[in-house]
Image 1: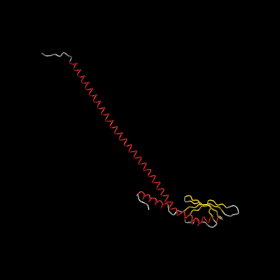
Image 2: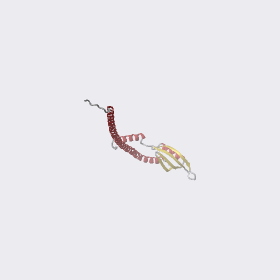
Image 3: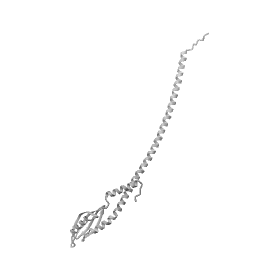
Image 4: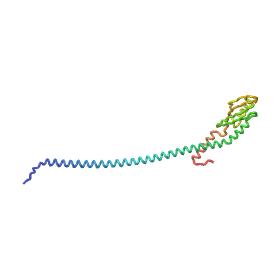
Length: 203
């Protein structure tokens, strides 16, 4: 004899669908949570890796900056060394010149002219002295003009002495003649720099 189900089958089917929906919703939420956690771990690892790279770059930049500073210090020291060598070389060249200059001063002094002071500023010489007359001063200037080690005499002050003793006090300037031309010194300096840069030894 057939069995008749008197229970409301629609209500049972509705409960089954609701249960299946809740299970699917829970599974989707769990999958979303797992995916979010995995994405969090992935991005955290990427950020940590990038921060590590940034730290390495900062350390390398700091090391490069220190090397640049050392190179700049070496360049400054090199320029100071070159300038010191040029000064020494200039002094070595001018050492015999000053002897010739003083010898030439004695040669150019005419009779009746006496020097009371000689001052040198760079290549400019200043003579203070006393002469028996202004003619003697003119003769001194002509001798300087024809000298090998002195040139361009210029009279600044001449005063006639007062009193019974005749004479004139004077102040004049002249230029010292340099035997080494500036371009020769520059050429030697360039050659020396080139030899230092190539690691050569200057004799």
